[in-house]
Image 1: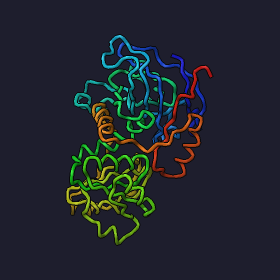
Image 2: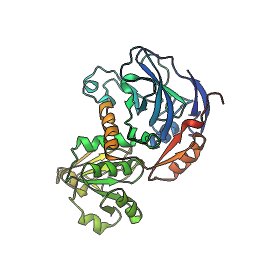
Image 3: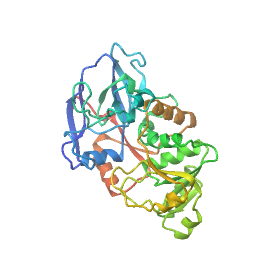
Image 4: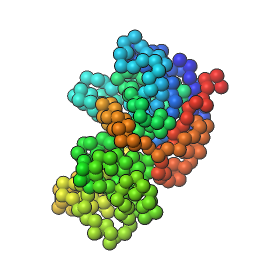
Length: 350
């Protein structure tokens, strides 16, 4: 299948038009015309080579909303015309203990990311959603509920599941006290989801300038992390903290905010962190943990949950040829929304 997208041709993260071919459908494959493709901060890190050397040209994108245009003969779950999504992974071994209980992201043999990774069968490097079409095995395609706005649903497949999974893992519900560090693309979804689960949510920020925005999302307010008096007064006041900061930072101010048996979960930064003191953890039986997206079943669950509760990410819709402008904004700092590309202007004939 001939298609077109935007690719990085080197580690300078500058996207350029790229014509390439998707594989012919295997028996269990679904071919999708991509309608909307979200832009994730991890796309920037990946094409920059921040997480290791990459294969170029590289088409990023793992927040994909589209429509089925063809299915392989073994496909039973989808048919032409269905609205579907594809998230951060497109394959796994499907046989290990993690895959067996729906945690494909922790596949013992390594899940296959949506872009930048060898295909498990033919070894070709996977190419992501900044494109007109994609071909994915049926088990990694998700059904998009009718209640969701297709133009705003794409970030649920990354920002949504990345924050939903730890909220579910640590049993957030009515009466839970949840802190969210950062109110960017991940953070604003963490707030919306936790509020919908019944939690009392506090946004942790370096300044109070996001207080009004936090409250508009359902948070009780903002705790300013640079206000020493306020931070001391808030010690032991939270059960769970979702840390969405995407760069190296200091955890020491935040751990004491956890109550006994509380957990701080890192979902933003991948790599080195500043050293932190162990005393608050030992004397409060507190924990620092990490979490990686979610399995396919849980990703379908967050799509359904968002549809049920009327939750959409805050999105700015752009054209694919504006992707480099979006990257420039992301480089300058955290933004409280997600960029989503409307792929209708892409044409294979161009």
